Image (spheres, protein in one colour):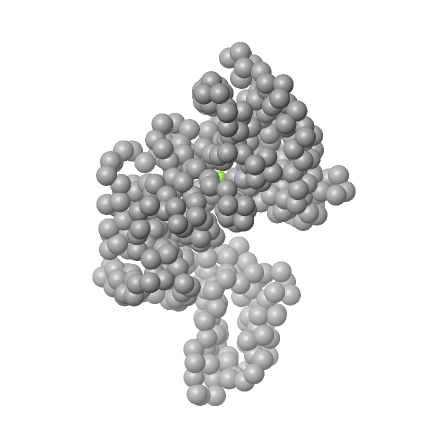
Length: 416
Ligand code: ADP
Ligand code: ASP
Ligand code: MG
């Protein structure tokens, strides 16, 4: 008998019929003789609705109250799933994070899990119950409810699986696994049978929202494989695991992208020590996070300094930078709030050259101008106009023949 943690995302519990379907899947797993702990997200659209309520009421919701509010979504779905299980004759009990003791730090709205108490869960399992737990939420040392950031139920599931030393952590979603790129943008994308923790971490941090980045970090730390699979099909899904267990060796594994980006460039910046720190300090003082940074090497008296950031911070940052440009004299600011970041990820890049050449040629062939480039050992990211994003992803996907990875072609996702 194995212990299996299953997480069902928002679309998997989006309607009562789907909650019934989830109950049947849980029962199937039980009937195979396994103990099951289920983590649920809020019903599809519910977290957005709650956030919108808060933001409509006040301009800056108090973080403590915000967490109390948005954590309610998961409590609805956990109890409904327990009822659906009862209705099908399966004994089950639902619990929120306070009842279980999913302990986090004090950081409201994006808390980190510090510890998970397992006694209650083990006790319920020993009594033959399926244990249904609210994802996305935790409790801090002050006894206050916290939440783990958008997509945080994935992290709840991995943290529970690690604490319980579960045999498997299964993340059920609305697509058949991890694809070479978002199948909603590129329907020809292929499902990967395996992906390494390292690549998945890059994909998630660069915009592929199929798994929350922290869930991958945590799984990698505990060497806990995650299986990503669909609630609506019996396909085997994707195993996120150690690099040595990845059977298909590929040059590149996937393309991630994020749309909500902006770019700001200062030209004519005095070429002297400390200037970069001065620019970044002005921005970080306002708690604004910078993403990519580039400065051209020059032996002239001035240099160009360019950075990207999330679009939501664009207007504030531009004000700060324009003020700074005035102080520095003769500095000229250029900016664009309609850019996107496209990233190619693959561990094969470590040992093979020419990946960047193929990528840049594919973008050039589609007349896509690259505004900025950053690279690391296993990824290449470029900033391009947002309106060219789909064309760019398609072009790079074709150039690396990523559509040819799976032998069988099926509809990639369920229309919701
Ligand atoms: P859930 O509600 O189950 O947590 P999410 O919406 O958070 O589901 O994540 C699943 C979605 O992630 C898919 O519907 C898909 O559009 C998107 N996605 C982005 N990139 C990828 C990728 N590389 N592979 C699979 N899905 C991806
Ligand atoms: N319900 C939360 C969200 O929408 C958490 C999750 O779905 O993982 O972000
Ligand atoms: Mg999610």
